[in-house]
Length: 494
Image (cartoon, rainbow, N blue to C red):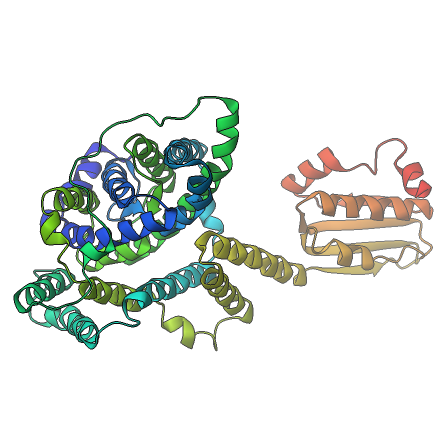
């Protein structure tokens, strides 16, 4: 956790902006939380209570100020089977366990793994999410009265044009207020938030999931909890990185893991489902002026206040207003420059980006898409590094001593080229393998070095390895067998 003064600044350095943006986010959270509850197969109040609890706790304990966390579709879809087969109480228990797993992952500093996510994967993640956000609005735009399209167009006009008059009030909030007022005054017959599901009228209460506390129960919920923990943290850390870039401020990824875990653990005891960071709501927050922890805290508190106290009024908000906001988020989230950059960026980077987008959009699972992107990035990186590998040789004047000079990175992808560079049938008294310009990385490269040494010795040549740097020498001393008794016999036996 940051110092007390820095932590205080994260709360109170942008009070007005955070409160206004928090209000906008709270209004946008309501229909999404209801929709995610429906996806998971539970009552709408489960998602609404979760959004309140997760937002408040991550605002306090998370590592990324200004990021919005709540109930999400990414975690909801993972719980469908559990709810169907075992019921709500097992969902709550799985949420608690998922939170505990996330806390453990934060304690183990697994947030540092974000450094292995390439820029191409990040761009693909953002573009795919923008597409998914837009696709999620299509049910509200298909088979609806013409009035709905007019309201959405009017909402978009307000969102993009109102900032030209003043930026003192977030334009998404103005969009909600204007369209709701018009709808109530003129009696528009359009779909509203209340049509999504019944809003709860009571505060959440602390409860312990009513399940048998035994190994069988643990085996039932563990696979779901592990999946939720991994997917939730992956989406949260990716979103945190995007907010880092948008606000040009750093965040503590390991603290965010712990914060997300605490939020899910407590939420399970408050009758809520698991959740994680929401890039769509985080984008709304940032674009509405939210920067500090107060914005996420306000979003959670105002969400609960509106559904419990102002439920009748909130239920009258036309869905067209929220659809307009989410379309704005979709447009703003998509990296339009990435399309132009397809011509200029390396082909491998473009393939990674496109593959990430395609997999996410096809599976509707951000985690799978990101994992595919990371895997492809690793493969392309290994291929590039392997191409920088070379072996040359120099023969002594008497023709009895050859020195092989190895340059580049010796690892699993370059070990075949390493072996192919040697002429084991050449009659020599001595062979020197100079690796002063190379680095030995893994067991595959050590095995290749062993094989080369032993093959030359089998042909009667004396072999000397020179130029090992400290790291290479350490791995060779630990894993190599060419100087151990019986190594040549083992090679000849094969």
